[in-house]
Length: 474
Image 1: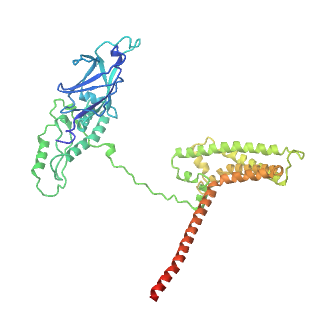
Image 2: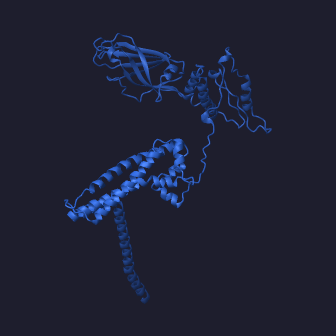
């Protein structure tokens, strides 16, 4: 007997839902009874909240198959001190194990609907409401039974013929290989796959083949018996020949896939690597599809819009400085005037270049973007350089404006300028400062350790010489 076939069906009761309106009591504990084929009985007492207090207790249905009948009854028992307590049936359900297995989800849990036997309490039932009683349980199906159900379900619909062939193609070869692997007898390399069980007699299974057919070695008796069973076993005894389905043991997931990556030389020269450090040069080189080019263009367009707005703001500040008169509160020296002039020039150039890029590339398609971005050498090198010019102009204008403000503030309060610049510079370069201090501490520790080792060696050396001299004198 196979290992999988020896495993029984197992059910674990988790909880009951919607049972409280069946009794007028405020809270009561349901008793769930499970009977399989009228000879295997299992019973569990649930809590007042409907939960099973002992989830480790499971009911193993020995000798059951998919056609076995399962009767589920829910009882109410009044709490009293009498030895013989009367039970009242409140809900029940009767269905086969195969029907139960179809209610399972991915976690093997299922929600079994129960039919109320008694009228629900009007006091506990909402107006216009109905009673829906469910039993939540976990059903463990043997693997061979689960595969058999999948095959049987796939033959019930002719409209989904193609999808059923794929599912059968995935499950059929694995069923045969596992049966060969778990068999109790040893089989040579020339043995064929044994015939299908009677439950699958309506499926035409592809006949196996023999390996090493060029040699003349005789087959053993067991292999001959298997080969003869294919000729004697009736796979197509059904009267309705249209129900016979050829199971194709081929599925897309079983086909070999080409996984080798084509190696492309994407090495960059020094100039290419330098340009790629501040632009999207490598992304443009490696782009192949239109969606990739559109993504790059969208990112550049967003940058140009943001840089253009920033340049306009900086240009407005520079223009406002031109209105300072000589009798203003703060004095403007030559360095401040040079800084504001440099910022104005950078802002004006940046606005012009940014407007040109937006005019040409805004709303362009992927093909148009590729055509305009290529230079005379067929590369994207010069486009990547020029595309960052508006950002460079914004940076120069911002630095010039900062120099102007620092120069004007220096004449009023030099100490504040030095302290603020020192704090800002320290925070910006904090990682390098910490790294330098850490390296210095490690270096000093190493120097101290080596000095200590050398000192200890110098102290031990004379003592050894004295001992050797005393030994030589004796």
